[in-house]
Length: 172
Image 1 (cartoon, rainbow, N blue to C red):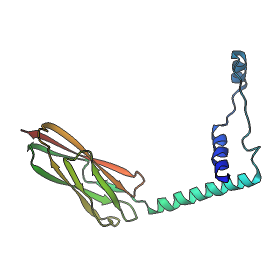
Image 2 (image 1 turned 60 degrees about the vertical axis):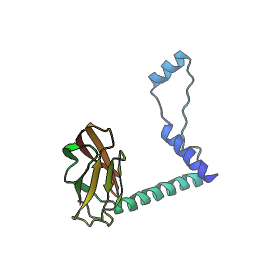
Image 3 (image 1 turned 45 degrees about the horizontal axis):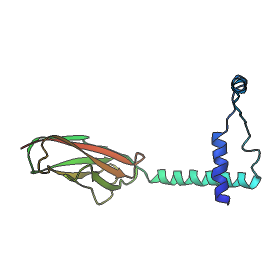
Image 4 (image 1 turned 90 degrees about the vertical axis):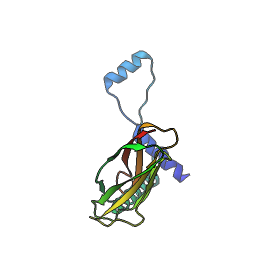
């Protein structure tokens, strides 16, 4: 029951507002019924104390999470293979540099299509160090002309995901 009271009380706090007297007059003329309440007035001291404790707990979790975060940069955000023959393997690397103060952990790399296969660094990247994300592209049968694919990188950074792209013009 306690856990239900906190979100309900928080919702009252977030959505309570007061309008101007002009707004109230216009609403009264239109026949609209309005009400305003002071959300804190009906809360018991115990609920207020629980809400404050929850706010502090969330703030502490955010602080701990931020302490583990770092930042990164890529040497390029797009690689253009140019013209490639259909159904042949082509490879590139995206160099990723840890520009933060904590070890960079690449949690996952995924591609927007099965024709693109990325490979992530397995070990954490120390601050200031660089490693590579390898990307292989092989067009599928019948996949011709300009192809653009996205590789999504998930890491322990404030912006949890980052994207790099590859492009190729597949000739038959």
